[in-house]
Amino acid sequence: MNILRLLAIFIVIWLLVRIVRNYRNKVQITASRRNSNNLDTMVECARCGLHIPKQEAIRKGKRYYCSKQHADED
Ligand SMILES: [Zn+2]
Image 1 (cartoon, rainbow, N blue to C red):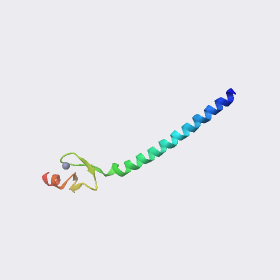
Image 2 (cartoon, rainbow, N blue to C red):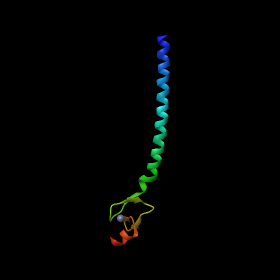
Image 3 (tube, protein in one colour):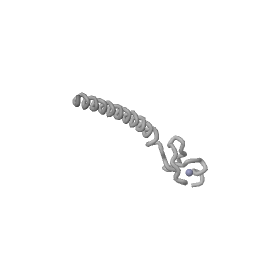
Image 4 (cartoon, rainbow, N blue to C red):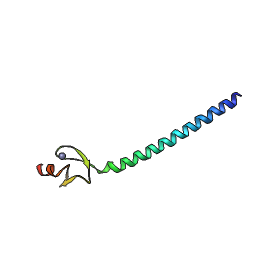
């Protein structure tokens, strides 16, 4: 009886570990996807220091700005 109980507990723990691992993998994949979308596209405004996506930033020489107004002012 004791061996059967131990076996049952072991199976339950093993199943739980599998479920948690699967869940973690899913979370990591979605997190890394989000990061790869944002990481290399964020730039800092040379005037106010605001972080903005590169596609939305206004480039003036080597510098990036959050708005046309800041690009003109600097
Ligand atoms: Zn700015």
